[in-house]
Image (tube, rainbow, N blue to C red; front, side, top):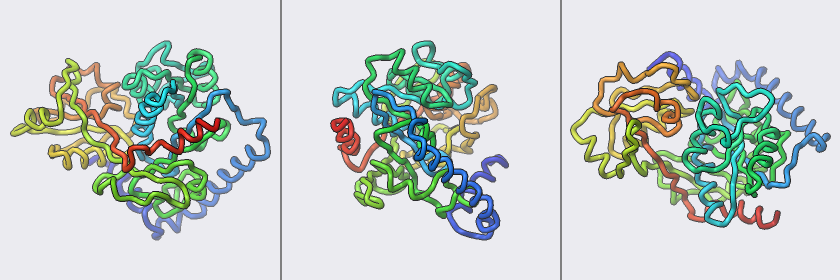
Length: 347
């Protein structure tokens, strides 16, 4: 484990408790709290500064730092909305890409170097129109202008972007919940814990428990749990796609490793172990790692498994050992998106 990953793991563990480190950092968290409260108060007092489109917006975000599962929820929501006759589009920040005046849209390119890794993944996986800009209002304007058929917009990670008007909010969390309940840096929260009550739906990603057993409400808000599970394995170089059972047979008796550059890479490795593949010496890389050079050359394994988010930046590497682990989101209720459909019908 690298020093970076070791420190990240220790920090997240410390954030689960109100220990000495958290207490020492609490004065800085008070500064964060004042900033967050001032920002919210500003937009409450100046609603004219909030950009609201004719297209309803559903924000998918999280209160806690680190990967909580926003993009899998966004992908599943796109499918659900399409199945009910909607034409969804997606706006995102475009993390890791330099975007200046004009928003970048999938009408021009779906490459990760242009849209960012997560927007690129969404565009590739779903074919949905995507626009990226650090100012979500500008992304929304570009999406509406270039894709007039879009009649509902999903903001992938925009909970704290208060300039963006929204009709509904999904808060995604994982088994960490709210951690110790404190704001950064004394805790893992980047927004006030009270914002949980303002969600229209809470989704909790779980790794080791049954998604069928979970509370239906958290603080009065509809709640579902989600589990990610391998649905297929796709060869990075050739595009060959095999079923999970075929993959288990292919990997049997071979050495398998795994690489992940996501918010919580250990969750990906834990899913593989539960599936039946025990990756040897898995490699955790920083979230949004740019893959400017190949990290695979030093890995001694017959097969290397990566995430779809990593795959959009790894096609350039000619390594026949790499397979993409496609995943599906399994929810505790088949109609998990019902509160959002109700909102759209009211709108």
